[in-house]
Length: 142
Image (cartoon, rainbow, N blue to C red; front, side, top):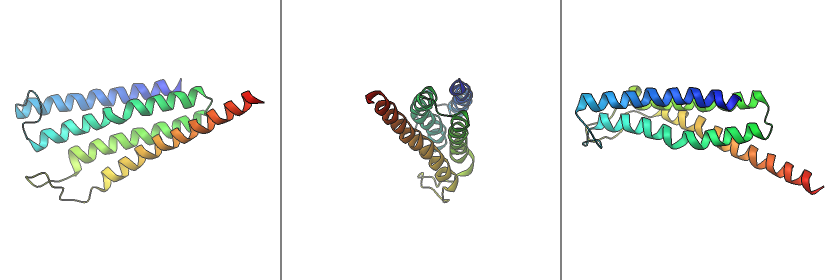
C-alpha cells in the first residue's frame, strides 16, 4: 500500500522530467537524439537516469513491503530514494557547470549525494529482501 504512494509520487516526477525534456527539445530544435547539444544531453540524461533506476527500486520496495517490512522502513527507503532522484535531476539540470566539450567544471557533490542515496536505498532493500526470503525459507523447512 505504501509502495503505491511512492510509485505515484515518482510517476509525477517522471512526468515533470519528461515535460522539461520536451521543452528543451523545442527550445533547441532537437526532434530526435541530442544533436550534440550539451544542454539537450543534460535534460535527456536526467530523464533517462530516472527511468533506469526507478523501476528496479519500485519492484524491490513492493516486494519488501509484501514480505512484511515495517511501514517506517518502507517510508525511510521511499524518502531516501525520492530525495536521491530529485537531487540528481537538480544537480544535472541546475547546479553542474561544463565547458563546451562537456567536461565537468565543478566537483559534482550533489550528484554524488544523489547517487549515494539511490545506491543505499536499492542496496539495503536488496539485502533486506534476501534476509526476508532466507527467514521465510528457514521457517518453511522447520
